[in-house]
View (spheres, rainbow, N blue to C red):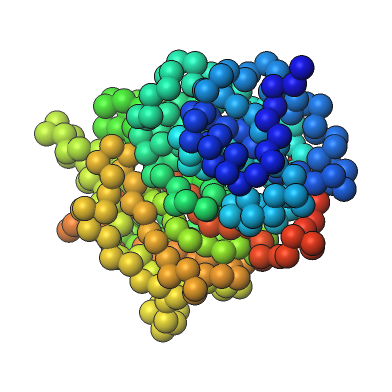
Length: 343
């Protein structure tokens, strides 16, 4: 007998995500071919991992439950949305069995080790070692859309080549700067680890310029930026990098901006971060955008103008993009997503 809960009303769904610690939800349609292809695998996960009041698998027919689909911005099927403590913590779009299995099994393993505790855990501000790491909570009704960044088109100016590259910013793992005091003290140049540092530092001065094209048109609500400079060490005279302070954001540019060029172009939004904006545990600040100005976004340029201090280096560990994928459509015009991986 299937353990999957078929949602019949908005009230039932609201009650479910409130009563079960984790709810894995399959948003599907009867006419969607990829939805049918991945359904047996979803049922297998449900059979293996369901635990009363802790891990629940649900299915929502978007044609029958239009209010739920609209609430969570479902515009294409299949979309798998994972809730923890009634908050969206992860989204898998498309019939990608490998990705869905990986995300769900890691979450289930974490639930087994952490129990029903609401502190830490998957998607929480404190982060964890498995799955997708988040340095801050997601706003209600919006999801992590960082997977829409076209990493092949990234461009980064004034970064120190001894540290990570532009792709490093979008790594889904927990930053090494949070892993241990020993790692966070390292500057990446002393040979403490054979791996390339998983953060960026500016090169000749404190400025950084990042160009991010997207694979689809987005509505961008928030940007999470993580910066984990190490604490000063009396035995180490290396310069301690700063956290970003002033950030200018430009939307829908065709290419990266030069530093002088950026001075002549009005930013779509300019933000000044203070010490109070950075989460003490995760080193993450939430940049809430003027949503009306970021409705049909095909690219972003993030310009770190200066750092919070008197140094000449700025450090950035992670970036996450939060919002909605694609333009809003009427449910009658919903599209199916192919079953190829990555779609």
